[in-house]
Length: 447
Image (cartoon, rainbow, N blue to C red; front, side):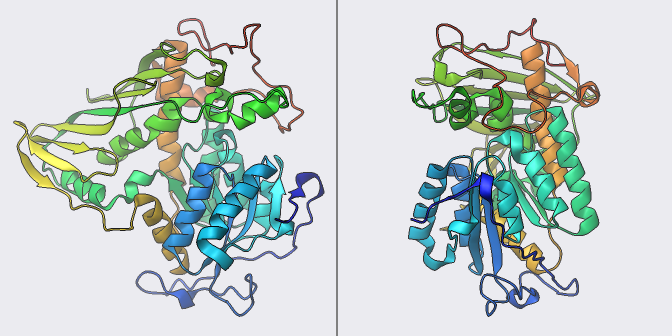
C-alpha cells in the first residue's frame, strides 16, 4: 500500500476536466457521447472519473454502486479524515474491481481539507462523509463545475439547507448534475406504486405512517490514544453537531417517500417528542435513542413519523399511506402492496431484478443522464426532505410546535462556526462520568 498523502501537503494534479456531452444525444446512455480526452488514460476517452469523499461503509458502498452501475467508470481519487479508512476502502474496492480502482498515493487525501484534492481530480464527486460537511462539500464541487452525488441527509441544520439550495441553483445554471441520495426514489416497485397512488388507486391520502425502528448504528468505543475531537469524528453518527441525530439520519428515507407520494408538497409545521430510554453509555454521544414527529398540513393531513435505535426492541421499517379508497404499504426494499380498506391485496409490485438494488439504480441512471447531456439536478428534493427532518429534530429538542417557515427563517446552525480542524475545540464534552449531555425538551433552545 502506498503511503497516504497528508492533507497538509497536497500535491494536486493540475488538470481540470469537465464532462462535455452533446445535448442532441437522443435516448439514454451512449458511451460515445462523452469527450473525456484527458481521462485517466488518454485512449479511454469515454471513461468517467469518480472521486469519493468519505471512505466509511456508506462511502465505499456508493463507490461500489457507481462502479457496478456503469462499467466505464474508474475510481481515481479518495479522501477521508483518517488514513486507515482510506486504506481499508481501497483494499476492499480494489479486490472487487481490480484496475478500475486507480488511486495512487498522489490522489489519496487525508484530513479535513482532503475534499479539495478529490474535487480537483475527478469528473463526478461522491460525498458520503460526516453529514455536517455534505452541504459545503457539495457546493464546492458544483462551484468547480463537477457533477456531484450527495448522500442523505444534505445537512444537519438550517444553515446547511441554505447551502445545499445554493448548490442546487448553481448546478442548474452551470449545467452540472446533482444526485440526491434518497435511494427509495430509485426502487422500481415504489415508482410504480407512486404512479398508482398519483393515479388515484387508493383515493385521497388522509394520513401517512412512517416507521424506522432498529438497533443502534455502529457504536464506537473510545480508544485512550484518541483526542476528544478524534473520538467524536470516529463516532460521528452519534454526535448531533456532526450527524443531526436519527431523524435526519434514518427517518429521512420514510419522510422523503411521504413527500414523494404527496407530490412533494411540504408540511406547515411539526411537533414531536423523544429522548433516552434504553441506551445511556458514552458511545451514544449526544443522540437520542427514540423520536416521534407529527407533521401537519394546512388541509388537515398528517405524517406520523417514528424512529428508534434500541437493542432488544421491535424493529420496523415501513410506510403506510392511508387513502379514502385503500392503502399502500412500503417495507424497505420489499415489493410495495396496495390493498382495499378491508386489507385485501389488489396489487403487488414485482420483485426487483436479480443483482439490482436502488443504490445501484440511482448511480446507473445518474451516470446515464450525464452521458446523455441531461444530468439530473435534484438538489432541491434532497434539501426539502432534509429540511423536513431538521424541522422534526428541532421540534423534538425544543419540545415545541415549530412552523416550517419559522424554522427556515431561524437559519439555525450547530456550533462551531467557520473552518473546522482536528485542533478545533469540540462543541460538546463528556461530564465527569464520561457521559455526554443531551437536549432537554422544554428547556433546550436551538434558535
